[in-house]
Image (cartoon, rainbow over all chains, first blue to last red; front, side, top):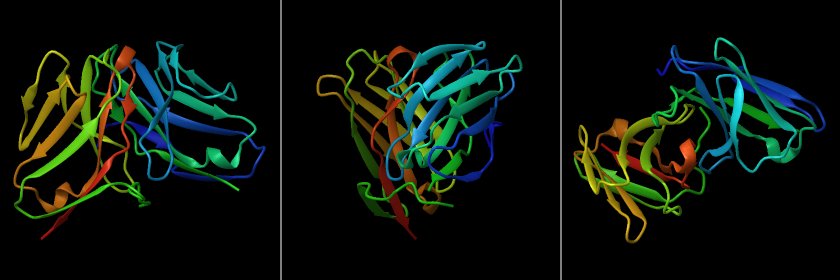
Length: 112
Length: 110
């Protein structure tokens, strides 16, 4: 176990709805990255937060947004859900620029 | 748990064999390369990493080889065990983020 937890485990939404996914950081880790993993694919980088500021973003539209809190926990928000947003959403935490990122178990989002 | 391995290249080996998983990467500017293991229903788990100024690094039962000339990375697992069955991803780290490859499913038969 990595010490990184995510909630909820599974979620079912319909097109057009909004969703919030949560991630708790491993102790001492001030950086969190979010990834989207479609079935049969590798994780794709969405964005990264460092000390509550966005610190890099992948090729995802603005309806994907995030927050990092003073305790370094984090949220991923997705507005106007589309069918293609169905995927496993992973968060990974680490300290500063250290490259060993610790992944949570993920949230499986299904959009109907 | 749900499968992460649909439509992935698959390597099938017998318990006790050595396994070699290969990966091609794309960014010459990446400074770290990392191998992750992902079991069904879990997030990726760090296995081993290698800096771009190295060509080989060994861990416990695992060895990573880096060939920058042809942008190729390999993971060697010695004496493969049924618990090694999982999807293996290589990742490169341009600018402090991770870019993952497509993954290879390793199936180990007893």
